[in-house]
Length: 447
Image (cartoon, rainbow, N blue to C red):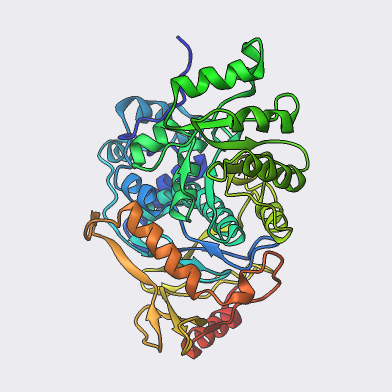
């Protein structure tokens, strides 16, 4: 039988790094597994050409966290690994009944955030909180990358439609689902990924392939057959042969709703295509552009007044090619009520559970974030809210449409200088005196 690599959604416990399991077993052997612990998840620093990030993936992260568990077969496999040769049977029996019973605080999905500030906090027995690390990082980092890239495209597009065309370019089939969701919540208008569209209830968008045109004796016959079969959604790909001749053929077909340009000098071709369509009495036909587009190319096309009505973005979106990874980390900040820090150069952390407060200017724009201890108060709005209490959701999670609307409101509140695609602006983040004093105390006494 071929190996099936899709995980069992009810047995996600081993979808983790081996050292999470060895540490769990070690905590148990040391009598520490049930000590109350606090871990926090944050991005150390923003990637190049990013002045902000969009927090995404929380719905899947939380629902899957509550389903972390181990099948009997998985427990038997772990038991057979050499590292666990001296671990008592009682620990493996605990795996069979594992359930996350802690609390989770997080920023609302869709929140715009910045480097260094806590976006999620886990308060749970030490062994449970440890196991959550790999899963939470994997669940949140990639959707956050894509949502952040997508919002930059939305801001560059200036109200024009955007479609996710990335499914075929993703790093594995599962990436297409995550990309479709993350780009839609950030403001994209649909996806070419059919199953993602069905599951998520978002528009499914598609055009045609060059192969269709090549399969017919002539381009005109290919267009005519396509329009006859799909009269209500005829978007014709016009650049298989001579692009401008393709536009002329498309203009002559009454059912044509849009044409798609996928190669060449898109700005020049769009202007020439618009002229041909208008001269043919087809001002109603829209122009869709695709072909390795990103936010900078979209910006430049529109800055040059290219008459493009919509953009399909694929490879650059689903891979976030210019910034394909985040320095997202998950660090222990307290155990048994005592703050913990890390002192490695460039990796300083602040001790204890924290809250992030956001202030707005009189105009309603972000004016700075202030990080405090979780029990402190400050001016502004607290961004971390409790989503899981003692292993149960505190309420219904926001639906995708609500998250999408929230991202739009966040984008409106983001100061204009941070929307510049090449912005080097640093958002103001401050820390409370209590945090600074405790960090200094632990730093002086550490070691």
